[in-house]
Image (cartoon, rainbow, N blue to C red; front, side):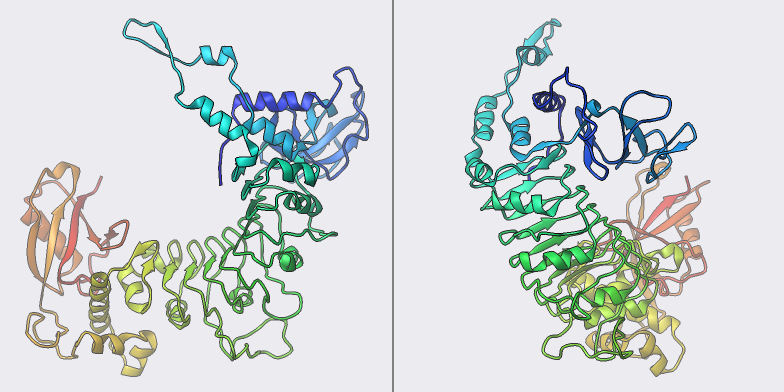
Length: 563
């Protein structure tokens, strides 16, 4: 979609458009605004709020409108003034009182369209467009193609994508007039306007027969849908930061038969509430569901989405999830009569899901990570910014995730190459064999892919030299690594290739680096540079051995310095 901010010129035109609707000599009507109405400050369509009070204010004459602004810090108080409480605001500095003539209840869709696209430059504005020559003289600038672009944008019948964000749209206008003006519009961005009634959304869609993508983010839409809008042509619906609850989604479901993408970021969603069963039904065309930046804390809520047959991408970044599992016949289901409820046998749960983004949650156990292998077609996974991936909080490095996740092709946004997979799996087996001393059953319980990976890579339990021919041998023999100086005060030094015992500790390697590179008065820091990782991993445990950290043949160690 087209995304442009409202510039000063557009704001002036927008203000003029509003002034046409009012007589400056007319006294403001007390019924011009109602409690619950969405408004913005006159001439400032980005300063949006909700009317909470209309009436007198003690100590002042006339009628005042109390507004609770959407943005924190936009107000002066909490709805109280001089010790008198007029309404309860969201926060201590989100509310203020304004005269009615300083507020706007908005404009129609087509009025906003005029303000955004049908503009001409004044002579004063064109005179301000210049550069200074070598002799410090003004040289006028002519924008090549400006007239052609403005002419094209002003031919509304040719527009296929439009952005009317933060223009104070509150009214749909006549559907027939909208339809004749914008017959080919396919994408419409109405972010940050004053729309509150779903009925008005339906009228807008009725007047835009070609519309496929609609962005209603940052509109405070009513939680009650009295008249279900007809949105049959919509394929992409964006409702980020719109105060939407899942109950509304269920009500809208039947009017969105062709919906492919649904974005619900930042709505403080805590639960998924299907209407007629324990799992969400319908949405047969839905391929992408974005639930990022919400407050979902239990995986039970996500299980309710497992029967969405076409769902390919599920975005759950920045929620409060701490555990996850793959549902089966023994999966707990909240709200059911029994402690367990059998899912439909004719359809594997999450059967079409190929992308699951879980960054920024509270996942800390590897059992949850291992359960991702049970999802039939899952190949794109994000687990960054979880405790399980935080090396400073006993998390594990990238190569461990790749080894444990058999089907992952994209991890944390980076492609997993065949070479990285092979190296990661061999390093992982080496790590497990060096640290595990329990029974085979216990090792396989903690590391479900361990035996499988040993067979895949021909790794035997014996511990002769790594360099021997035939099947790979796990050993504490020599490994080949590259040491590369990156410290600012170390100067340019060639990368060194060294063979070291796999049992060499980080502390010992630091001492060796001081000798290898003749470092004086420099305390080295060591980082493991891994393929596919955006940042190298700090090796901070001086007592840990290279084999315990998964350092293998061909690894690169970066030698930095304490700053």
